[in-house]
Length: 331
Image (cartoon, rainbow, N blue to C red; front, side):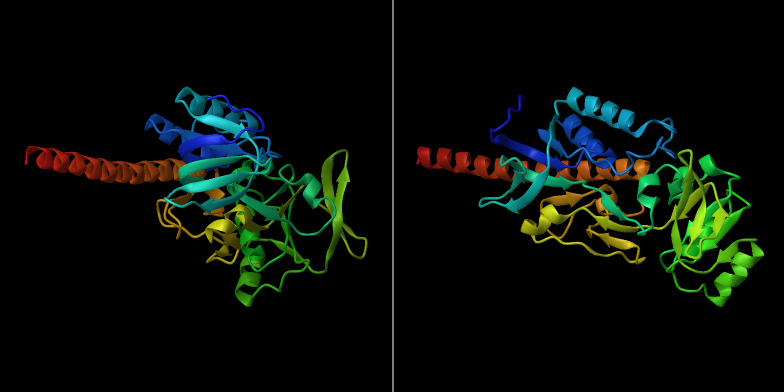
């Protein structure tokens, strides 16, 4: 289908909001199920600063942008449409289905929605943290630990899980320092574990990260002291991108682990609103790329099954009407 600027877009079986690993995997599944599907993507992948995708079997180290380009090509191969744009609203329509409003004023209708908009990382307000994010400021040891193995690593604490994060990174390096910054003091049990693993603890707020030659050189404390480090790990607060779902009555809720806000859904991704599924980080704040992709496949299959049930109900209604008409005609 050719999509031109300024025109409303036809009705699809499914509109996928968000074109990351989850959204493209869901669209691929639906395309292979011979469903009409449109992926609307704002072009803001969370992992764009990263040098590679890790933990994705057969694709380890792949450039994130290259992975998305390949995924988009596969979706097109099965008849899926892709639109670069931003969704700013979604709401139910009379008679069933949904209307999706685009930021440019256009509207697209869908029988079902798959929301895969991901999340926003709320980072500590420390100079150079945002600028270095995804490079040598990290959060997930399973995503980036190998790349910083044996480096002097600093853990910039901002919440109660900092000690846990420090102990995790200790698996990749024997030189780990926990900077308490604004986090609470570790418990007695945590202090013992940190000490047993040789993890130093530095009290006081961090003023900034020290950068030399486009690389982290250390952590500058409020008193001016610089503690040499080559990488810094932080624990962001994860907040699902879900503002566009307000018209559906969907909102984010606090994650059970207290790490942020997500959209609640069942195991298939179905939300409290019938006909609306979520997949990837918008629902699972801890999911890596391979997990988000799997969730997209699972949601796509569930959506197709739901549409099959609806198509069958409609066919049965029409079949009964034809049968009744024939019966009346013979009387």
